[in-house]
Image 1 (cartoon, rainbow, N blue to C red):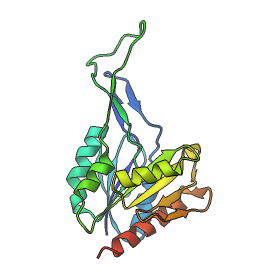
Image 2: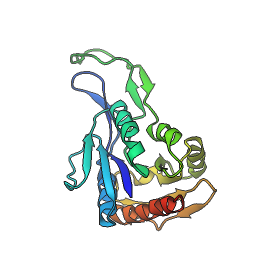
Image 3: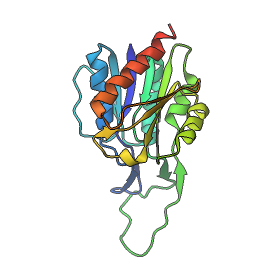
Image 4: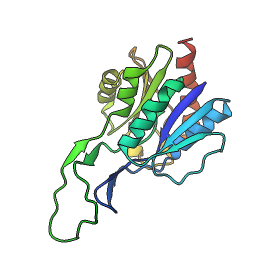
Length: 210
């Protein structure tokens, strides 16, 4: 199968040297790439600003901002069977970006606007055989909010990952499906273990469509 995977944060410029971003190392995205390759799948990686190396057999597209990632995903998704949206895209960006460096004096107010909802936009364009998988990073006890996001974004699978595990080498997740099924995973799986499982679940979704 052909998989499109996103990884890492996005950086939304404030001025020539500063930015807004999310705390993401891209480790999970790299683990997903490795798990997919181990199963013999073809992978395109769209990576935000991360320093992790990936095998040369992977087509890698480097981006910085949410808008750049949106353009890359929309241009490449049609050539793939599934999109796994593991990137931690910044939810907001400055309305105006200074061309220089804002002086460190007094107080400054930033006006922010929402960035594109990449996985939702991809879902609106998917063909019958294509699948979209998203992530929901929310505090403990907000599983139903993730269920609502799954439906609103028209996803085929949502990974509910409690906020408390952020920046951890391990992950505690629940897989949510459009038919109402919920699959709690073993607590504190390594990201490599989780990646192998998620690739299997993604393949199951694709197999049922062909």
